[in-house]
Length: 247
Image (cartoon, rainbow, N blue to C red; front, side, top):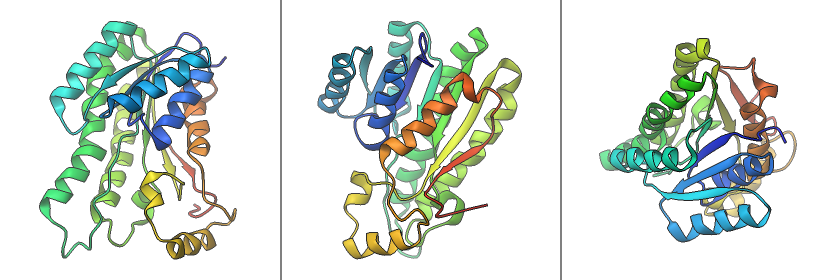
């Protein structure tokens, strides 16, 4: 198994892409600290991983709250002794045209999607620097690359995440720590389930591979970047979008 002996922390791990990442990392041998707001859902993820012979523990954490990030990651470090792999996945949307967007909705999305990633990196980087090995993987979005009407806050947060990824890559590369982003396109999750069928059909028409992606499609990319197979890749954005955006 590619990740035997490694410890991963996944935010937003209770559902969707985060859930798929947690399962995929565990399948490759990593012990997984799963973090999200919902204790019941987290416990279900831990049970699923344990049932497959893996090791995991749940940490209730609202990434919009700096103190919860600090205390949650401190507990995870205390239990596992280290964190080798950080997957910044937690994210929300608060869609509205920019002329009508409330400041509170702008702040909530930037805090959850971008600021939380910077705070999580700060809390785990000491462990990675000490052992001179680490993988920081942030889940960005195709809309952070091409924009999306009605999602100025979301697009800005994901574009910022890409910039943060590159800056961190330059800061810690000398210590054998990589920092990369995965930018999903249209993925079938609870976040996209609320969209109209007409919107989904129109979206598929823009995807050369002719289908929406699955959380597992994204998780496979995360596992690759977390492994030694990707040891010479840093500061990059791995697009998982079915060809929706190229170049």
